[in-house]
Length: 253
Image (cartoon, rainbow, N blue to C red; front, top):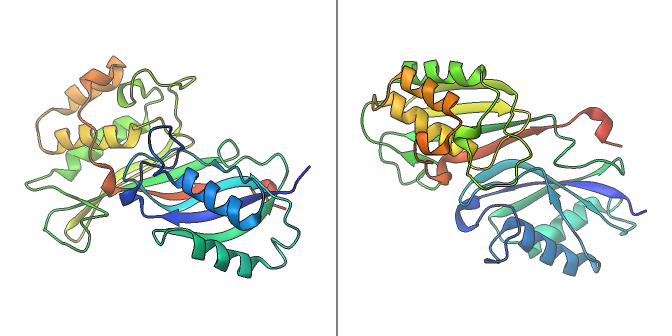
């Protein structure tokens, strides 16, 4: 059995259709890394990521596991990381290679994931690729009332794409809130897992509360409806960042 490793990376998702390999486009993080690392290491590298990210979504901390027979991958790690970063696009950074148990799984071994969504209300060309510009008054207090409902919610059927392959729609929410930072508004949510498109749908719907297009009562009805058609539109992916992934210490060697 080949040794297993976690690859710690980060990426700017602007030019990609998310992490997950897709038949209709070569522009996914997974496909690009698998192709480039397989050539570099002279063996077939298959990466299993810690989760999907949607088109345009960024990852400040991301992990993928892979098996590899290269004997000096750890003893000459800094040199290998230099070579890896040299052969991948500049908007992808490979940060570390970590030895893990042979049964470690980047997706299923994770115990928590934290996403943040960034909104700016004063036009700023330096953040446009990483934050959504939204004009007009936004009531953060109302959106935090909606966030309180989310913290007590388990079933998120109303906030994921229909006809997907989720075994269930249950998520354990550990943190969910809105904060004001200077001229920016930041949404933070932490959970054991997320459904496809879930965070963007939540943000889009809570913004309808914050702009007083719907009431808190309406929002609660949307949650309880378990109907994606009742919720708001999914907001653009460029303001969404996967911030952290948490694993138990027993995963690592």
